[in-house]
Image (tube, rainbow, N blue to C red; front, top):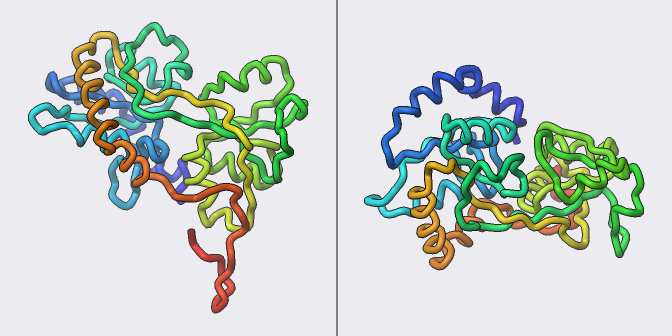
Length: 276
């Protein structure tokens, strides 16, 4: 798996020239949407496929599900979570994907209907006690993603009951967890399956908390001037879900792993770990 750093380095022209990128997109037609992404994204929602050199995921499948006569021309633009709100609010971009509870100023935007849930768990390198409670782990180090908000954990951080340790990516979070640099990590179950079962972590075991800690509703977050586009998107979300296409898309873009994640088995002939 290529690191976030390698990904950003490979696309350095885009990141160093946002004004050029966005000024070109400002000439888009009425049915065009400038979609900003917390690059390189995350599976299964929207993520950059290095082999195909394009974005893939449930979001891409959704916009491709429109009838040609009714489709949007969507331009996917590399950004960051810290910049997405500003870009949409100032109309430099049109929308991004996320949850209203993650937004700093939710009243600035309009929201589509929910397209899917985002279920987050706590992860550890050792088995969880049952029942598990963060209340019994005073001053525990929690690996988190830089610029991400965690409404469930924030009261613990504010009261110094838990210590936030920011990382640049989910891969870095898993790496720090495996090396004991943090006691726990928080991430969605989809991100955990995509990262922790990678062959990079063959020698490690990872465990998932018995219960999820948050379930957030994911939708398209848009500028207030795009009510017509929002209504059109809502109509297609209903079709996308009722047809079963959403569930098929989710299954296509996730890895079918289950926790606990064990140390990889070795093949009899080579002694090397088997790939997932």
